[in-house]
Structures are given as structure tokens and as C-alpha cells.
Image (cartoon, rainbow over all chains, first blue to last red; front, top):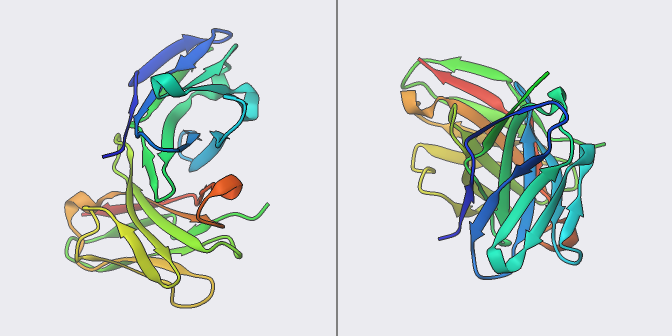
Length: 111
Length: 116
């Protein structure tokens, strides 16, 4: 069965620190990969997505993610986080049928 | 920008009662989904719906759940006899096509269901 794992349950950073959130999936076929963000009290919003082409994908708010096919990974990065980035981040995989979400990583950015 | 809307934003109900959660997908989208997120846990797929029928459902989506598209705009999730463990945030999502470059699900704001 398709599954998605995220390396960290909770990450705490200071403002201006660099961020990398890990995501690995298990599915041998072609997948589309996504990162969603959920700010406190709000709904899921799409940060970025990968379908094909350049494995380095740029999203909104300065986020980017790199698809490494050989590692089944799609890690999210941001060079300098802000307090407003405090949220829950979900990696998701779509094999054309439905989405499978990772368990989420809570990011807390300290001012 | 078009968006998925959901009503109500918060529903409180007694155990054993029926609830209907409502969603209005983006108007030209063809695929519809329900997900739930129990507090502190990950988002879980419940059901997908296309062409007026369920195309896929998870183990969570048992006989107490049903979905319907009663008219051209609404997409509803009914829980027939709620249980305490049904308390969660329920997200509706819609998608234009089945795959390719437009394969992005757009999520609604969610309905928080509290079962007492």
C-alpha cells in the first residue's frame, strides 16, 4: 500500500534559520507530489507540487522542494524562516487515484 | 480565484444523531473528495466521487457514511449515527480532471464536527 512518512513530528526553529522537512513515500509507479500547509485554525493550502520536469520545484512564500526519485523523497526547504511560517506541513502523494497524506510536521518558529 | 466552500464551519451534535456536512466544490470541477483529520493526527482519505457515484472509498467510510451530489453545486457527506470518534475536521476537496497538469485538489476550509 502506498504510504508517506515525514521525518519529524515537531520542528522548532528561530527566525532566519534554514528549514528542511523530510518526506519519503513508498510507491513504485509515477506519482505526483505535493506539500500542503495548514496555518493554525485554517484549512489546507497548496505550497507547491511536482508532476514532472525539473526536480527542484519552487512554491509560494519562498518554499522549494526537491524530488529525488532514487530516494523516493520530496523534501521541503526554505533558506530563512519567519515567525509567520509557524504551521503544520503535510507532504502528500497522488498516484492518480487519491491522495495519501503524511502524518504532518509541526513547525514552530520562535521570534 | 474560485474556491471550495463548506458549511457549517462548526457542527456540534449528540452521539447517535445524524449530521450532514455540506460542500460547494469549484464550479467546473468533476472529481470530489472528503477527508477527515482527527485532532493531532494526519489527514485521512474518506471517499472520492465522480460522475454521480463513488469511485473509491477507504476503510473508514463504512455504512454509516454516505455522499451525495443532490444538485449541480452541492456535495454532501452524511453521517447517519454519529459516534464520539467521528469528532474531527472534515475537509472537502475538488479537482478538475483525473490527472496531468491540472491534477491539483483544492481544499475547502473544513467543518469541525464535535460529537458529544
